[in-house]
Length: 162
Image 1: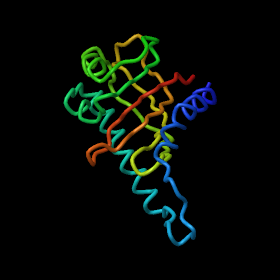
Image 2 (image 1 turned 90 degrees about the vertical axis):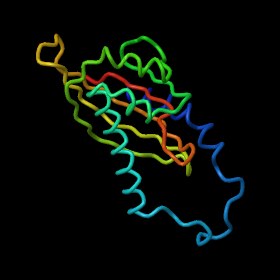
Image 3 (image 1 turned 135 degrees about the vertical axis):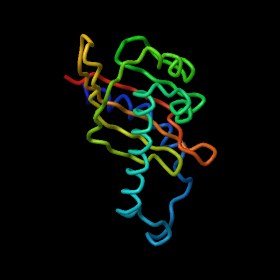
Image 4 (image 1 turned 180 degrees about the horizontal axis):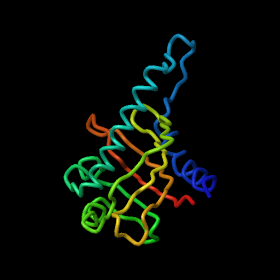
């Protein structure tokens, strides 16, 4: 299931990556610096903070904080089978959410150029003590884009994990 999700996500992302690729290649290795470990680490830390902010907003039903993270043309697909949601739909359905707590694991960041990144991770959601289902684990892929100097979530896709 994960392989299908990753392959379909990468197929969807390939035009984005190629659209942002430079038109000409530098003639020497010195002309274009390679990302350092510290910059990769800083990027991962930045996105981990954004993802945690997203889940804190969901947990606390903070519509403003959640909406501030989303791009205007955001689309999200959740495991409930209801299809795509736009930014307004996602914000409005927060009132029905019941995330009591969460745990993030295995966060990875794949830069797609200077202004785009693919972030994947697993989250285990904990629901209130009286909920019929107490836990749900999902694998998530998010596309983030830099717009107006700020990183915004453009696409969200979750897949149920057993």
